[in-house]
Amino acid sequence: MCGVGGILYKTIGNQGKSPVGKDLMKMLESMTHRGQDSSGFTVVGEDIDGDLVLRIWTDDPAQAADVLSMAEEALQKAGGVVRTRSAWGQFLRLTIDYEGEIPALAEAILNTPGVALHSIGETSEVIKDVGTPVAMDGIHSLSQMRGTHGIGHVRMATESRVDVNHAHPFWAYPFTDVTVVHNGQLTNYHKLKRMYEDQGHRFQTGNDSELIAVYLADKLANGDTLDSALRSSLSDLDGTFTYLVSTKNGLGYAKDQWSAKPLVTMETDDIIAIASEEIALRGVFNQEIDRVEPQNNEVMTWLL
Image 1 (cartoon, one colour):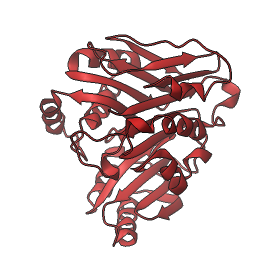
Image 2 (spheres, helix red, strand yellow; image 1 turned 45 degrees about the vertical axis):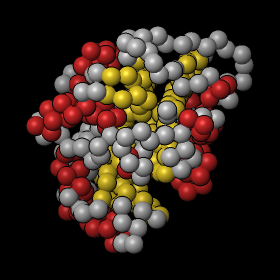
Image 3 (cartoon, helix red, strand yellow; image 1 turned 30 degrees about the vertical axis):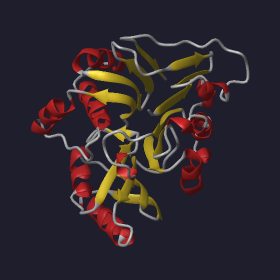
């Protein structure tokens, strides 16, 4: 059992200035009974100093400073020019200027032993850690982040191990700005993973949710709209799933044919919010709003 949440602010004048981090924190904090192993967020639309923002993590706490420096050096050798740098513990956030191909940049970083690349984005970044949202906010200051939209997740691990790298959201290597949070289980994960690996895609975990991100990003890269990519997933993905996806300019969800994993939405002229439970949405809106419960085989998208 996990909890998912997402929010998008529609008002044009507030784009880039809305309290995405604060509202996602409130939503996920109210769902910690659904999972306390790890928490994570994607924040989209925050102003960055550079072409790209990257989030990097190392699994080696004893040598974290050295390993992260090696990853940064690899990035620079690949053509990245560092504009800003923030490092704490096992985490590194960089904004960079870069004119090359994203796969080459990602490969250069991931070839550094002990490194995981949590996201590359033009406007989005993934922040995730073990523990609850409140504990995570104390380390990563998520509630201070502003933007246009975002998604989040609280996890109760069922199959893959509990660590920072296996927390949600999952970024879609090697694309920018496509991330996913997921509640469910895919039964054709290994078959699809082998197919994408044969096409040159690289997976950083054994978590089936990572595959959904790669699946959607690949569809978008090949000309699908976000809506059509989500609709294709209803037949291409087997299992029980409810997932949310964020892109550079959109937010969406998909529910499988069984509709076993809960989802609730509330929407005004200014905001759309989505979560596993209604309690997560009530803290976002200051007026009474009817809830909508998406049904089986349902897809919905919102674009800025």
